[in-house]
Image (cartoon, rainbow, N blue to C red; front, side, top):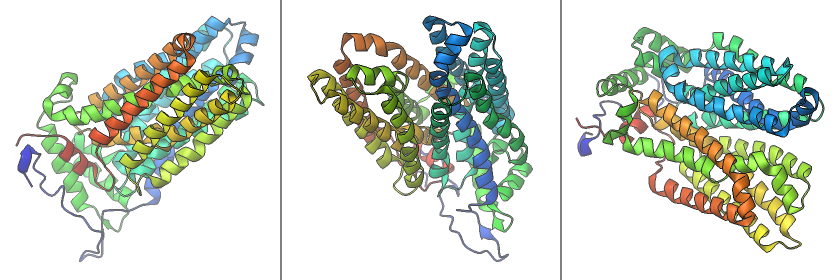
Length: 469
């Protein structure tokens, strides 16, 4: 099919049923092998470590300030350096992943994280504490991009959504673990615990394969076939899938190089708009403002901050687990729409509660905040990263991925930085603005985000990138 100026699809869009060939080989289509499962588990160790990084500062606050004599301002600098490091990491993550591979980037990210955790754990003053937090942020900035991309590139199409969403499930689990352990261990022990998944991943990465898509990109075709065979199973015929990957990669590699300015060609407008847009709407609805300032929000509403924050930490896990289970059954779009709509209604409820200021305010704020967390975990938290990892063609994936993660971290910083100023102006008005942003997110998803369930990466990218023949 070559109409409408789309990339010639050769065999890319041809059906590829799971049948037995004459040589008694199963054709590669939906093989779920121990290697795919193990490789995914190794990759999401990094995601778990990212969650630990995000969850560390809250339970460690009182202990660090008391032992090291930090002021509130100094501790605020410490907390914010994770975001600064994340922005630095996002500037280079795509290029690094294209240069040294997906496995190499995960190794590099964990080296930054291990240095960061041990620098924090053995800190004697603010300087080593801050440098450790910055190093941790750079590592997390690398992980945020490379883990979902790696998982999407190694998994078969029928499980890609669920396996890639497991990335966010582990982030939520790591965050919750820090909240819970932080109540029973010292902040130094908590930092050492945070380093454990990083160390595990460093050693486990020796036993997982590189991404076959990256191998195709750098021209290592023999390794591509060997890696694909290992991922799909020794009795699986991978010839069709390998040919599709090579044909697709060669075609896109011949059109333009992976340079930043090339992203703004018209042919990439759809994929860039979707990827960057999802990163914006994941954050601009107030996600991290609520996560970072939940205690003060509950206190302002007259609700127990301990009960409220613990509930938030716990509710994220089952919500994200449901997303993992449904991503390849319902599809990405329905879950994203339900998620954005739920966040919109929940933020509106919180705004209304603060506006009314009556006896029901505290319970309405609690319900609204928990509903927001539930809705966020159901879709936008993980599926935004899933879609981002699926839609960018291989020749611009590095630059486009860096731009997307940079926008995500920058939006997160903007929302968290402005929250206190907005809340001083009007608490109710702040949440009405967040509700309006989530409403715009619903419209954006409904109008522009394509469904990617059940399609290979080659099918998705060939259909969304409009190439002249």
